Image (tube, rainbow over all chains, first blue to last red; front, top):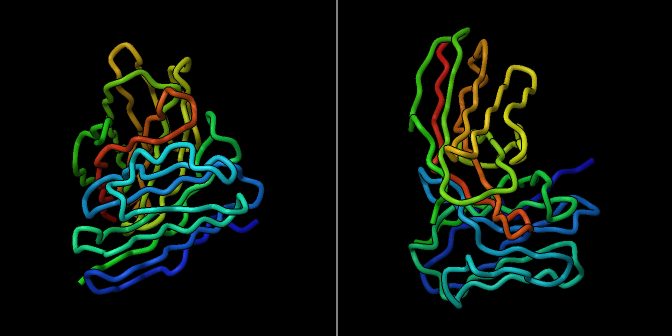
Amino acid sequence: GAGVSQTPSNKVTEKGKYVELRCDPISGHTALYWYRQSLGQGPEFLIYFQGTGAADDSGLPNDRFFAVRPEGSVSTLKIQRTERGDSAVYLCASSLTPIGNEQFFGPGTRLTVL
Amino acid sequence: SQQGEEDPQALSIQEGENATMNCSYKTSINNLQWYRQNSGRGLVHLILIRSNEREKHSGRLRVTLDTSKKSSSLLITASRAADTASYFCATDDSGGYNKLIFGAGTRLAVHP
């Protein structure tokens, strides 16, 4: 079956612009996670959805970042007023249930803010 | 913040040799997972070891977990050039919903 997909694969934007990053999880996976990975570092947790609700958004760096998952499947990560420091690879992962299961990662979206 | 720390940061070996990577973490866990990443993009899950397990095998991979020392190791036997990648350990948030906390990774280079 299809894995986790993310679009776009690359996004270049200018400082101050708004961007949306999309994640399509594996069908039937109830848990969805967003991570951000800077060069040379491991991924850092941003937000976790169980179904439609954001169960933990403690990793979002500030209120410019927001994510939704309105129907419990596809999720969109939204970044307002982008800054150069937002440049990173944004990774999405899903798991069948949130407890004790492996997470399947998408290929990521590389965001570059000029 | 990152919980896990991998050691070494970089490892260079010849094909056929074994590669050992270590991971240390700070807080109690439910399980620990190892992932591989090629070219800075998607992560591939390798193996999950639960906190009540001490050793696990999968093909050429062997993972150990010592919860008393808060450490884990990943051994890749008979390495191949295709094993060249970054390897990350990730621990879950013991609050129970599998929020992963990654280390900075070990960059493995296997030379033909």
